[in-house]
Amino acid sequence: MRLQPDLLHLKKEAVRHRFVVGVALIATAGVLVVAGAGGAAAKGGAKATKVRCTATTYNQSYPNLSGFSFSVLKCSMPFGAGVQQATYNESVVGTTSTASGTFKDFHDLGTVHGTYTLSGTLGTGAITASGLLKISGGTGAFKGAKGTAKLTCTTTDGGKTYTCTSTGTGTL
Image (cartoon, rainbow, N blue to C red; front, side):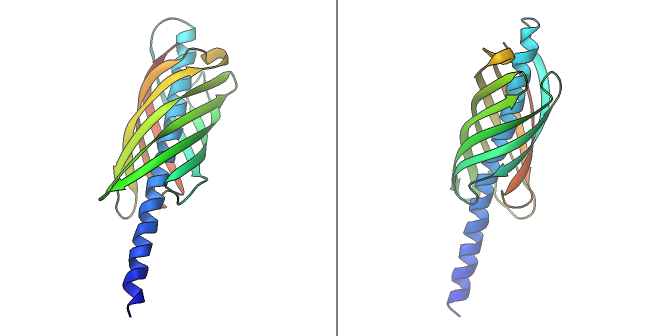
């Protein structure tokens, strides 16, 4: 009888760790997409351009609180499709999960890189987190890209996979 409460505690901790990892990965996917779009838009002129992207992220380090992820990106033009690699470090205090890390997006015309932060409340069912990303540079057509974006990410499987939407403004 004594083992059953211990098993329940371990199961709750596993769900918590999965969410944290998932949140970090989601943030990363969203960050890369917006960064690339801002750089490309600015190349045609000096004005800032708004971009919207979605990312499907796969946590390669699940259920660890730090690691890396890969994402499939779908962005408005001029970026279009792409992929992303990201790192993350997460912490959990009470029911709040906070993640931060770095990302690099790969598109046909170049790359974009930067950092992100993301936080959300742990719970059952779908979990949503939000945060901010900073674009700090790029290569190719996106060389010198700078910008910021808001992220919203959701996971329905405790952080193994998640979907993120990023909306932001960037310039080259």
